[in-house]
Image 1 (spheres, rainbow over the protein chains, first blue to last red):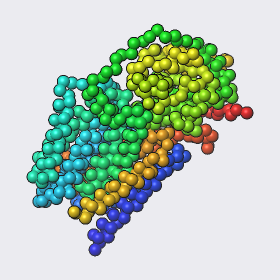
Image 2 (image 1 turned 45 degrees about the horizontal axis):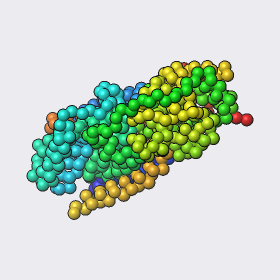
Image 3 (image 1 turned 90 degrees about the horizontal axis):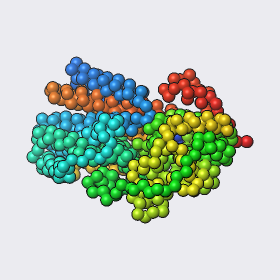
Image 4 (image 1 turned 30 degrees about the horizontal axis):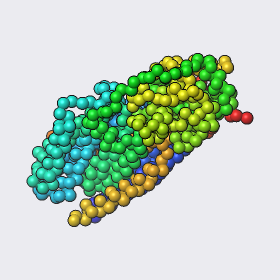
Length: 467
Length: 122
């Protein structure tokens, strides 16, 4: 009797937790409520973890308790430390790392539970599917995220990695996974098959992310996030645990949605991002024609902006590379002091993960109501006196709108070319990630200010103060 | 078909639809915190690790349980802390209250900028 109450208590607590998770996510729809939303989610997750300790399968022997306490302790201390010190520019790799850990957990739990199923006799088909799914997707998410982490952290090259026979090797690994699934679902497979699946899926995760370039990471991280969510849901099926299914499904949905949004913002299909490296690129290196470029001094640029009515700032990843967010904010403040209206235009793929640029600017204390999404601000460029482009390239290339032969044709861009004056802060005339010429730099209203973004911005700040 | 499995599938699929509805309302401004927040949510697999560690009775299961607890806890707690850190930084133009004496990792230069509130156009 008592035991039944105990189970009911756990199940009801899980239900409360699931509802609270959805409420928490709903609060993420506005910056004002987002923080409390995350705190509600945190409380919901803690509740679910704590009531799980009441589960009757937990034996509370000294050894079990020691493993639990030690494991949770190590994981918590290490990750909370990392989470507190990680710089905001490194957020994509941090998310990738945590994501991989979640995937690893799902895989490890699935493998362990299969040992229990197998030891207790017959494995049902439902259990076999759940274990196969959790093990496969969780392992792929683990090693895939680790490779993404290594690329973003620059522990390895960010370029697509190619090696001989890559395509056959990848296909063979995939077919191997399929074969092991068939074996498991035919209920003929034992523990050894699950271990083999675990190992092969780990390998496949590496193979899957190696050929993806560093600049495509916003999409890859979203895909891996979604996969870990689904792996967690599969673990929910393995353990007959509803909260895991709900939480995993929410994350799976979120990751998939962000994947779609990111692919659309880059005007590429998911298949093209994941497998594009396998196709021989027909894109020749752009031959730099001798087109006119007009340079501008920091002083002239400062005057142009200081006496403008409206300046729209377009930050790109080059800004984050130069670590110049704080200087940019300072420039914005100086301009506002003079009565200039300053807005920031954020392209969806500015940065290395969805929405990354917003976080970088928020860290530099740019108020969020000064940050505008592409759709909100694109019509406003034609009214702006100056568009200041800092370290952005492909996302402001008008060829995406005008030149059907351009590789980025069709990609949504910021309409910087419609501003009355354009000032581009750029290190050199090197083309952007897509390796294509940018007509914007040669337009009559465009002036270039070459140099490191941070140094250029410091000069601009001084010049605006003096103007 | 097994009833439990079937009910689980109902929950899974309906929650995915619910997830799409809720997530599609999140502005791109908050996509990074959203991703890191949902990332923390799947850290709930920690409870799977707890169940494995709590019921382990062989060295192998102890090892798997340990890994499940350590990785799961890292995902869950690290993700929540880093998300909170990010969301704390998102502030509207008019600061609701004066700057608290909280250390800002970004450096003193920022602090100086913060104190000067932007002057609105007349």
